[in-house]
Length: 314
Image 1 (spheres, rainbow, N blue to C red):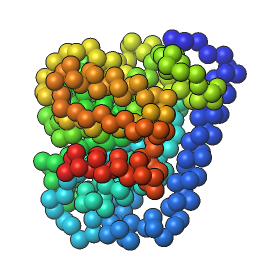
Image 2: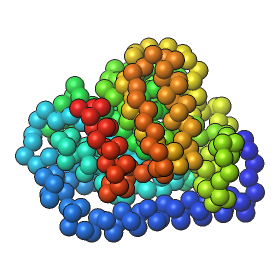
Image 3: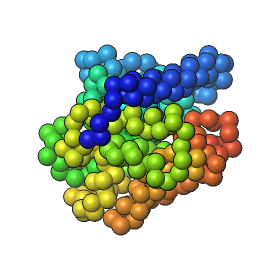
Image 4: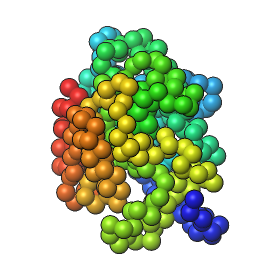
């Protein structure tokens, strides 16, 4: 583990909270506009459906109005560095998929540092099991289910996909494998796919100090004092790079990222690992775009990303 002074750790945590708070505020304000109302887009939103007993073990359901069966399903996992954000900050993702005819389960999970690894992953895996059991009640097609997420959500998306395809030793991951259901596709966007060794990001280019702080924060809050090598599912990219053939074929993958994203290299490495494993995949790198750029849906690159991502799964 890389040691961190209390002062530096507090500064990094403060910067992470500031960044997430800014995004959350923008999401809240955007949610007040008439254009954000799901009904204007032919979508209904069912809030706070429980998949477990904890207050964070809830999800929102977005679905096209009037459609009661046969809907392709998106299981969406929000980002936020494992310490912030929620399904409410990421309502736009649910709406964007649902307005194109998808049934979306937008998942909350418990957050670090109060709930470090493996709790967020355990919650996501439990939500996946709940969705598989209940998706038909909401009009979903059990034969068409994809998983998606951005940033930390992309990490959890990849971890879930690995658990579905490899018989893992962790009981909570093995339960996913034993369900026997592999996602039909995975959409990890702008992912931090290796939580350990964040110093790797500093080798590619000079970064402002506040960006460096935010890059180190996920390891500090998600793993804490735990040794990364003891928790491989926190680093799903390393598991894929190990090159072990899966027990079940890995699904198709569409991974989007921008060239100005400081964690761009994780997505590039993901593409290389998938190529070595013979997995069908598309890695799209959008010139000049920042982290989670596809959330800025008024921008041309974001619109292009959504078109390509939706075409990939439709």
